[in-house]
Amino acid sequence: MHTECGKYLRSSSEIFFYYMLKNTKILFTIEERYKDSNMMCDFYFPEYDCYVEICGTKHSTLYDERMKRKQELFGCILLREQSKYGDFLDDLINGRKLKSEY
Image 1 (cartoon, rainbow, N blue to C red):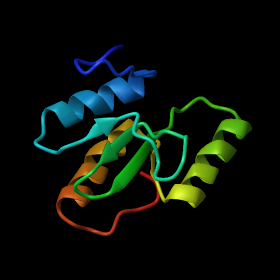
Image 2: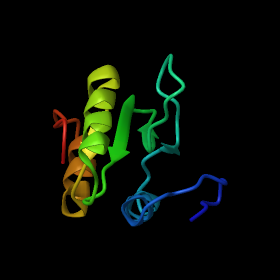
Image 3: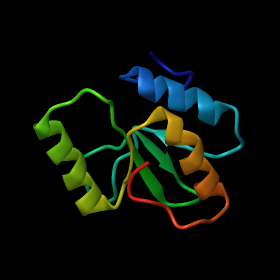
């Protein structure tokens, strides 16, 4: 699915999270480059300097290793379960310590 800004969402989980965000006043970007890297994250929250990767439920060991590597290199948050997306957003906007995964 292409967003209004022309960015492409690759999975149903990304689309679900995108529509959650559209119903908030949280500033975010899609497919932002990590600092000093050519790699991109799924979502970035500039007010919080927070990178997020949406992790699908069906993936390979190689995929898991790639996500963990991004987390080690860039400190991104991994969102694995749609039922936890709201918990992440609540922690983010209320200034709580963020977990590494939701």
